[in-house]
View 1 (tube, rainbow, N blue to C red):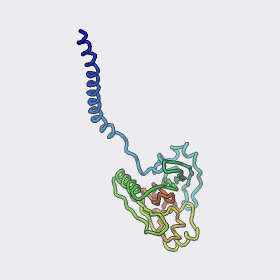
View 2: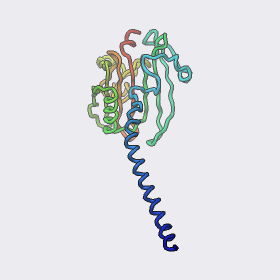
View 3: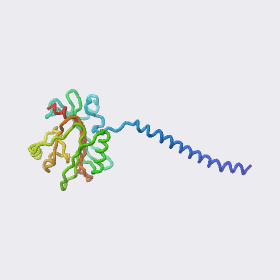
Length: 243
């Protein structure tokens, strides 16, 4: 009898261990069936949402709490539009940086321009390409990209555009004026350096928004801290009508 009890005592741990192993296999099998379905139901991130909640075409009046955080004033260049912005100090694994959030809305409160501008931004060409590819997949359309002509002492730059928005290059006369510091605060220019005055002095391309509804990604590619990152959702046709 003692031998039987001893065999039973020794066998029990083996039985429990075997049962636990079997349960683990069953759990893995169930998760392999459930997880794909659960992931398929998860909403995909919206890339053309630089303000994390404020989107083109909706009314800013639906966001009274967020609106109260911004400084707003009538646009001097676009009659009937109001320009709002705020600057925040943020931090991530790369370090600290400043972010300016801005938007424009009509008299009725409809958002026609939503922008996020960060400096410094620690991006390289590979990461910028990944972000552009991600936005293209989410929008189901290819990006139209432009890269900065190489210049000694300057970071590389890339600009990508989606949708009906196009970038209209400025005239040489206007670029010369900008090089002298003649930049209006709500002119909403796009350039490779995130600094229109500096780009004008370096004789680099500068554009303004034109066309229609779309999204623009612009980045200065320099992990040393001199880069920038800008994402803009814009209805250029609505802004043009306000002139």
